[in-house]
Image (cartoon, rainbow, N blue to C red):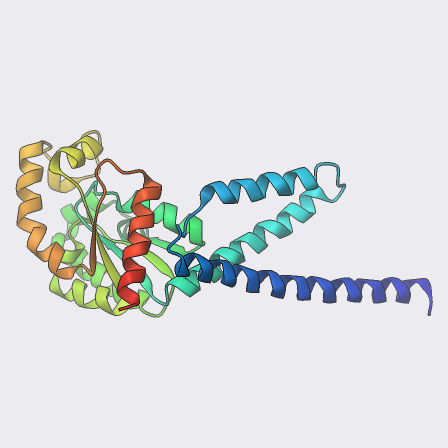
Length: 261
């Protein structure tokens, strides 16, 4: 055996070790998730993730392959999150609610923590139509836009482990609700009119509030929509005066309770 063949043999041995180590690591990730579920521990633990990151950076501080190893570990950690998501959710999570209830913030956080694909429906439709939402409403009307929502919800049923963040009016259309239910669990995020106003008062991308951006109008609209929102939802999560971590932990816990019934 010449030197090149010997090095290739060493490389093959290293690859076998890596495969075995990754399989063992993924198994441990599943055990951790099972332990958290069994003892009712918080699923999301960003502090622990930060601790692991510090430990990894410390270990690689003087390693000449630091950047390459960190690149590999970023993929390993992403896959760990996917394993967690698959164990928790065998379906898509559909977020509904009035504008400013927290759908975008919650969907961003969940997609990051579990490496789940995020679909912001308004943004997706806007990109496909190559128009802003206000321009779509002004050019084609609301009915056209709602049909696009329905089409997209049907399309997303072919995927799993997605976070689908719906526009404020999506759940008002019966056809949309039917397709939401086929996707997975529907989560209603809600807040007080005062909180909603505080969150949207400086936004210029809310066509429904044009000329009516005040607490009274928001309260009236929320009450008109409340019955349909609640009828569509599998669970309801209040977002007032809570951190994003608290909201997402409650959401996950409630979904797990629902799935275990």
